[in-house]
Image 1 (spheres, rainbow, N blue to C red):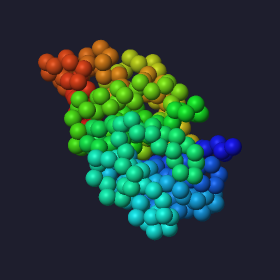
Image 2 (cartoon, rainbow, N blue to C red):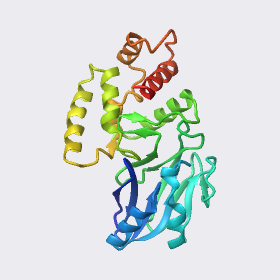
Image 3 (cartoon, helix red, strand yellow):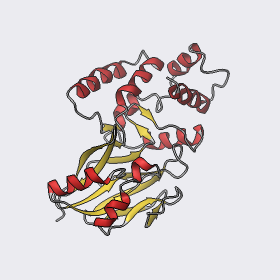
Image 4 (tube, rainbow, N blue to C red):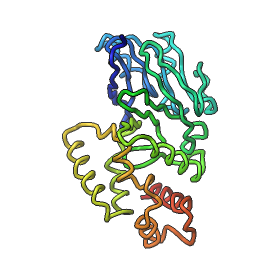
Length: 262
């Protein structure tokens, strides 16, 4: 019988989170932008690295891969179309994998927008549901559109929002309070959002991470999943950020543009 798996939060850089999924013996790392904190965690817990999982090509998500591969000869799972040379198991929408050493099945989603080939990993095997979404969905926000279009990112976020409400959202950055300040400006009448601001502010004051979040919390408070709400469009218009276009994707594009300069 396989041992239960859990997810360890490994802080890196200024505000990144690297995720170490392990069963007390074997471990897989998601988006190791820096090898040093991962190697330290493996040593401290007596874990053996059995796989590397990547969501997209940005350096703060893949920078630690070469150093990890010097120590561990393991497969590198990653997006098929995001230009990552280290990937040995290329993946895309609909692919399913079992993480070596963990007997952990994951389903792959294409979630372009932040980058053209960005993917996410979903655990939906009957255990606790998990989402490793890189920089597509953040707690209270979403990634910048460096390569994709507003329509692509809106569709990607709609796909993630359709996951079960209990799904834990393991995003890659501690941007939550900044994101919630923006959310409060565009949807000030949202009582669930006000409650979340208070709770997450207290969490940070205790020095604890605000992630993982859940899909239920994001649906209730994240403006980038709520861009069809009339209040959000109204506040965009009042702020002079939305001119004419009332189609949902136009609202989403205006919302993302405002956040870029908020």
